[in-house]
Image (cartoon, rainbow, N blue to C red):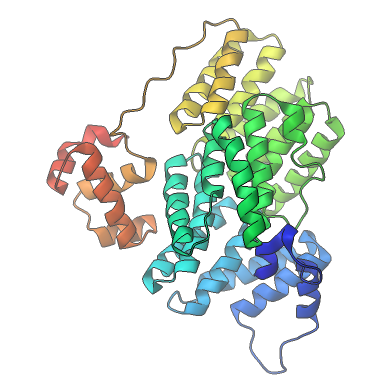
Length: 427
C-alpha cells in the first residue's frame, strides 16, 4: 500500500517493483489456504513483474474472491481498497463503482476513517468520469474534511472538479497547492492525477499540444490512470502525433476486449475514430462510440463522444449534421456542469454557422443532483431509508444525508410533501 501511495515519491528500494520482488520471495506456507488478500498480493506481484496481460486473470480471480467475502471483517476493508485499485488498473468502471460503493458502506459501518477516505476517493473518481459532478463533489468534499481532521490537507478533489468545471484560474492555483501537499505527505499518486487535470483543462480550452504534453511518456500497464487514455488519444491526434494516437487506440482496444463494458467499447471506438482522421471510416466509428456510450452510466462519455463527432462533421463540411450533434453535446455538457467542454461545443456551433446559443441559464438553487433525485423518487413512494440504501447500494446514513439535502432544496419536511413535489424530482 505504501508503494502505491508514494508512487513517484517512493524512496529508493521501495518502488512497486521492489515490493513485488520481496512478496514473490515469500511464498505461502505449505498447506495454508489462500485468502482473498493472498490472491490480491499474488496478482499485484504478477502485474508489477510480468505486466497486465499476464496478471489479468489473477486480478479478476482475486477481485471475485473479495466480492464473495463477508463485509463484516475489518480485513475486508483492506482487500476492498486493493480491489478498487485493481479494477481501475483493469479499466473496469462498472466494477470500480460496485466495489467503491461496497467499501464506503462497510467503512461507515465499522467507523474506519482511513478506509472511508479511500472509498470516497474511488467513488469520487467514478462520479467524475461518469459526469455526476455532484456525486464527485460529495465524495471529495467529505474526503477533504476527513483529511483536514488528520491535519493532512487534501486539495486534489477540488482540483479535479475545477478542471472538469472549466475553471482554469482556480485550477492552475490549485496545481501548485496539490504539488506542495503531495511532496510534504509523500503521496506521489497525487502528481499523476494532477497531470490528468492539466490534460482536462487544456482539452477544454482546445489547447491540444499542451494537453498532449501532460503525459509525455504515456500511461503504463500498472497505472491507475487508464481512464485518461481517451483524453490522451484526443490530444495526440489533434496535436499531430498521429502515431501515438494509433498506439493509444490499440491499447484501448486491448483493454476493451478484456473489459467489454459500454464505457470501454465506446472509448475504443472513439480512439479509432480519432486515429482515422479525415477517413470516411471515422464516421461509423464515431457513431459506434456514441451508441456504446449511450448505454454507459452517466452522460459525460456520451457528451464527449458527441462533441468529437460534431467537430469531425464540421471539418468534413457537413455543417447541418454538425450542428445537430454539437447541440446535443452542448446540452449534455452544460447539464452536468462541464463548462469548459460546453464552451468548446458552443464555439464549434458558431463555427458551424449557427448563432452562438444563449448563455447557460443559472442552475436553480433547488435542483437536485442525480443521486439526490434517485433517493427522493424512492422516498416519495414510501420506501424506508433502509430499503433505499439496499436498492442504491448506499449506507442508511448516506441516504439520510441525501434526504436532508432534498428536503432543504425543495422546501419540504416530510415524505408526504415529497410525493407532492414529484415534478421537481426529474424523470
